[in-house]
Image 1 (tube, helix red, strand yellow):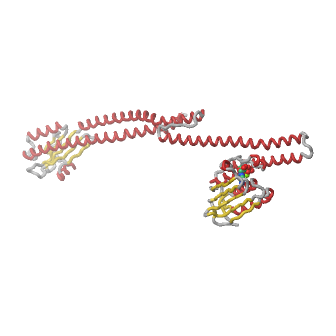
Image 2 (tube, rainbow, N blue to C red):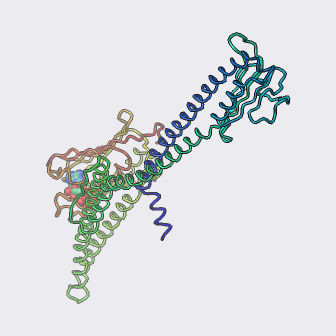
Image 3 (cartoon, protein in one colour):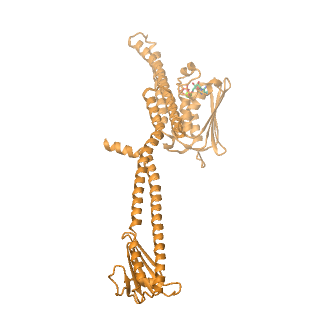
Length: 477
Ligand code: ATP
Ligand code: MG
């Protein structure tokens, strides 16, 4: 539980804002203060070096003038040496050209030979400065020469304490740390405040969704604080509207199904009851049995159609295998199969066209052909015709079922593809129709990515065309 809370906090927007503000606050302030401190240190050292150089240049002049390197008894040079080493808190050593120590303010190396890389370098290249930060020392080797005697006569080794500079640097570093601490504290406070303000609209979105799911008080949610929250709520409202439509269509479907099942079942139950209680005369029994059979077949057909529709609903078209389907051959088979049915209705059924293949599902296409031809025969007039056409049209394939039947009034044309929708309920019922055939056709056409078209005029007939785009080029007969 605790770990879940922890990970939740680390994943939160609040934590990320805190991290960003800390980085934004700390990194630049650390860089700026460090740059300022090192700049100060550099400048202070440079000032010190130039100060010492000047003092030493003056001393060098005096050393040469008084021939100090050969005779180190000069009082004025010695006292100046003492003074300088006291002022700078360090040691000063003077060596001649043979590296012999002429003077040492610590009085330990006088008369000895001093071999130091710094002195050698000084004889070769002139002034040498070496700065040791951690020893808090500045070491310099200055050539002894003057404007009148430009050749190097000796070298002056100066070791100076820079503890005063380092103390100031230390103070500045402490100040910088304090500043960083203040920035961290401010960042945390700012991050808390800012994240509370920034996260508030998101919390409102969550609360609105929760309110809605708890009570359904409102139809939609609205949090227009940010463009992003507006986009989220818009998408959520769209999803909600779609769910409502699905919900409504599902409950409508359930009530339609129960209603459609009730009628044939009532009549089956009624006839069966009459026979059961010997209330039907022996000559009526076959008629009643026929009615029971007819209604049971109607029920079976309806249930089969409902199963087909729910299968179509459940499978997405992308998951269904698409094969090469010989549309012309299937149409021919369907026309042959329905010839007897057409004769019964005194309708002429024929077909024309040329062999063409489409990409699709064979069973579904057979179902489509059957439903369209069956309707064209069923809603026809005695002496009428049904004409089926299959032929290529451009790079597509056309299937057309045209009849000279009763036609469909304009106001019903849009709705006949809905589940259980029938124009003339009594006629459809009399012919055993349930109003599911065209709903299945529409579903199949959509799954095949084809185009469905209806043209109809009451009394003149109906033409339904389907244009298949998924076409196979090679043709089989
Ligand atoms: P089912 O096909 O499920 O057995 P059905 O034929 O009543 O029942 P659909 O095929 O979906 O259902 O047709 C819906 C309605 O459209 C029909 O009831 C009928 O009123 C009308 N209709 C369909 N085809 C034609 C047609 N060719 N001519 C006139 N009306 C038609
Ligand atoms: Mg039908």
